Image (cartoon, rainbow, N blue to C red):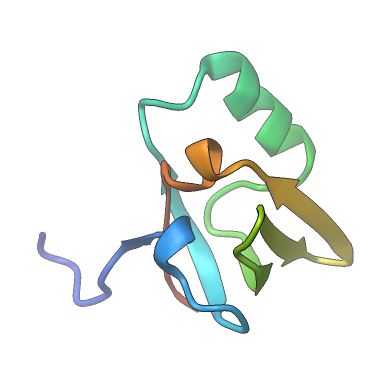
Length: 80
């Protein structure tokens, strides 16, 4: 990777972190990807991680979004 910014999985991001969405993994179903985009989750959107258990919850602009871990695991983020 030539970028100086390390990418990590959303599920590995500590609570309270402010990160930018880097990419969606190919494992995410295209229909589900479209739903995420409809909710405002797109690159390089900044989000704040509010919770990791029992689900990953992020603050995207002024909306809280709850994501199943199977989905959040395939979303890559980097430092905001």
